[in-house]
Image 1 (spheres, rainbow, N blue to C red):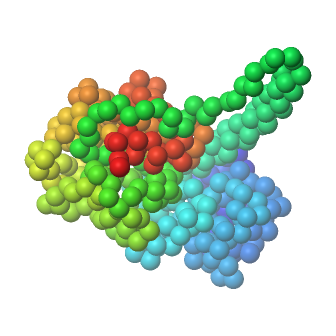
Image 2 (image 1 turned 90 degrees about the vertical axis):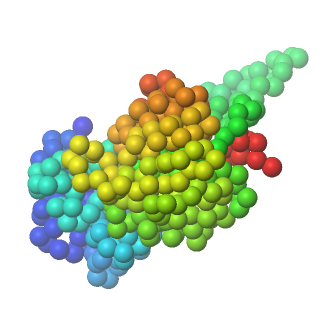
Image 3 (image 1 turned 90 degrees about the horizontal axis):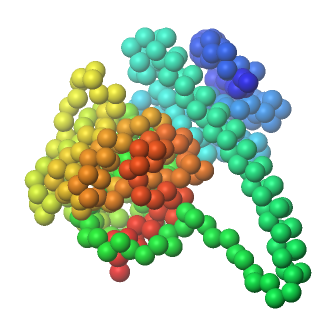
Length: 373
């Protein structure tokens, strides 16, 4: 089965380049191209692609407005191509807010050292989003069938004398009591789908949140400051891009800067951050969840609530494993609410996470677990 892709860009050269790279995979088929946002909306409705690659700056209708209209008229998985500039970061974050699921730098040299490697990354990301759409469609179909069966069973059961009413419970809701553990840090790791997930989670935390928060989001260096500022403007807690020497304070979230590594030093009662340059080819992720979580284990031991949200790959598994060995609590986002169920699945399959939660359930569950208020 091949996944259908619509390529949207006002540059004929870039359209051809992306089309050629995608068509190298037998499981991908570019079924059309669009030269502006209006053309993109019309072809999204007519062609019904599985994934759309979308430029931001286009005539007649830009990529952000096109995303909004497509999500309203023909919801589709969309990956944005963005310039790695401050303005490009702001525009990309707006596109993600509008419903786009992922983004890549438009300059392929900023994705990988060679065009072929960059093409491999592009094809992988497109297939991940296409599979997510397919899985979600199957889940919706299964849910509808299950609902019909359950309703018929309820009607039949209700007609039985002296029958008791049975109600379904959402296994992912934060119904459980607090474990009673004392925490000193909330640590969050995420990648693809993370910007929107973090926004939904962090905006629900109160101003007097009692723990410091470290956040590792896989994101280019040009994006993290704009993202931190965006979160700070909409959250009750304070959010900033982490700097060397920052002292961890309650009610303050520290976002690891892109292209670098964030380390925690000191003691659990006097912890501070150290930001390291990382020019090595050994580390695939800069920042890396594993590195930050491992440093949290060293300083805070088991007094950490670690959370792995949506993301591709397995970064965070080994850092979470180390935290777990110290007695920390690890939770993961559930498959249905993830954009890409990679990182959460990795910690779940390894037996590291104790609980899988829907994205919407995290804020209340966190507040209950740390016994806030």
